[in-house]
Every structure is written in structure tokens, then in C-alpha cells.
Image 1 (tube, helix red, strand yellow):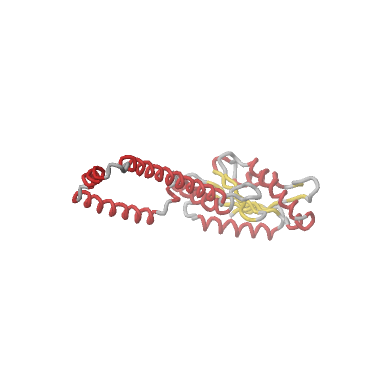
Image 2 (tube, one colour; image 1 turned 120 degrees about the vertical axis):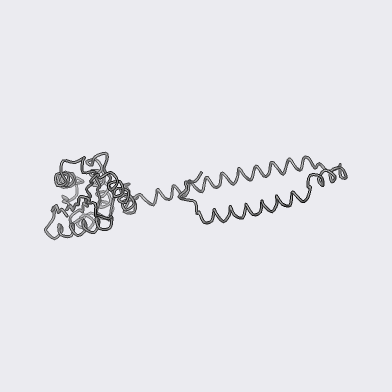
Length: 244
């Protein structure tokens, strides 16, 4: 059956109310009129008609429609689920996209509030990536993004998450307990990106901003601080690491 998130609750309540009202009306009608007796007398008067067969046919048609409706509802649920998953994945890198990251960060903050577990958010931005596109074209630029995504994904702990945030910008979320120190992990991220991503391309560097979650931080506040820190890092020069 479809997941409950794909069910429009007000519509379901309205439809159930209508179904309940119709069936209540029919119940009252059935108590006032003996339809079975009328049907019996009708069959006796028209014995040439296969009334019993028609009743069985009506029953089988009703069951068939129920099965048909169930299968169509189930298919719609699967389609909705598939579209939802597709909307959360970046088609180029294969990583979860910005929308998925925003949703995930809400969960990270909620769990951190409940269990008092710190986590660190890193924003990794490729320096002067435009030169790659200008020098080698969009196809090579896309390939570089894919390679960077793979390298970053390979270096992060199993408990961490990575998202393609925007263009040549990636977001990494990692439990603080799973890294030696926030700055040390930033250096690891930088090391896996710096250099020639592909043999025939220019060497890349990346600037990184990071923030350790605090209890007073909302998702918006956390992201705003990291973006401000990244702007500061870019102003200082390529390959800068900036903490909030």
C-alpha cells in the first residue's frame, strides 16, 4: 500500500464520510424494504431469467473492481515514492541533493537535541572551478564533479552524509565522535580533493568552512553561519579552511 505521506488526509476523511453516509442510508433502506423477498418473487415470476447467475456475476464484478482499484492505488503509491526519491538525488553526481540535505539536517538537529550528540557540518567549495569548464568544456567539468563526489564519498566515515549542495559545492555532515578533530577532518577532505582530479585537467584546490552544531543552532542558523565562513575563506584565498 502507498506510504501514509502520499495520502491526502482531508480527501480521505471526506471520502470516508461520504461512504459512511451512503452505507447508513442503505442500511436504513434495507431495514424498511425486504429486497431479498422482492428478488425471490421476481425470480419465481421470471424463471426463464438466470437471476442467480446474474447475482454471482455482479458479485465477481464487484470483487474484480476492488482488486483493480487496490492495484492502481498501490501503483500510484510506488510512482509517488519513486518520484520522491528522484527529487532527492542529484542526477550528475548521484549524491543526495540540496533538498535532501536540508531535510536530513533537520533530523540531525532533532537527534542531537534528544541525545546530546554533537555533529560537524562542512561546506566544501572547489576553487576556480570555472577554469575547468572554460578550458575543457562542460562535459569534462561534469566528469570532474563526479570524480570529486566519489573521492569525498570514499573518505568520509560510514556514519557521515554527503550532499551536492550547489554546482561545485558539497556539504558533509559527520558525527563529531567519529573524527579526531573538526579541523583535522577538514584537512582530510581537502587532501582528497586537491591536485589533479583527472590526468588531463588542471590541478584543483578547495576551500572549506565548517561549524560544530550547538544546542542553540537551528538548521537555518547553522547553514547561514557556514556560508558566511565560506565567504571569508574564499576572500582569504584558495585552499583556506575557515571555522565558524
